[in-house]
Amino acid sequence: MQPPKSKAAIHKAYRAAAKLWHPDRFEGNQKKRLEAEERFKRIHAAYQALCVHFENPTRELPEADFVSPIRRIPTPTIHFGGAPDCFVAPHFPARIREAIAGARVENSDPPVGFIDLSTGSARSSHFILLTGHRMYVRDPKGLLSVVWYSDLGDVDLVDSQAGKKPGAWQRIAETLAGKAQRYSLRICRLNGTLFRELTDRPDDRVKKVVYNFLRQMKSNWQS
Image (tube, rainbow, N blue to C red):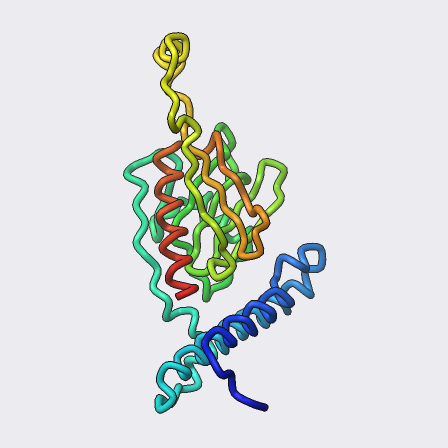
């Protein structure tokens, strides 16, 4: 078997393999999904090792680099600035730890931040979870969606009021009812499909934190 001739060839082979074994393809088959997650991690391991070896062919990579290279990717510190219902590791209340456990987060995928969207509920069934490898979103119906940072495409913070001046009635309404959400956080996969669009919740300042975090993680994973 011929070694890859360029880094672009490595990227192309990686994308093809990652698409074939992306865990989201097996959402309805838990056994197959677990197998896909393991294969997906191995694909990441091989991809990282090939990139390093391509840039430095004389370097001998230890076996540990192939087993868990994902851990070497830096995770930026996240701060929610005291926003309500937002939590940062390791300071998770018991109900938040229970929600994280319910998402079946692997031990090798450390939780980083949690945004509880289940207002008025004792259980955190609607949430956003950011880990070292992925972003989890559980919707109000209990459906859990996952995107790997290596599979992130465009991440955009869209200003719905860009170029517009608020009218008098809008200013009065904001004074009486509070300022409406201005930004929408749109998250797509590498193939261009929409993963999630966050509009009303969480609030704008939290959207900005998530936006900056995802952009940084995308850069770290795909560089």
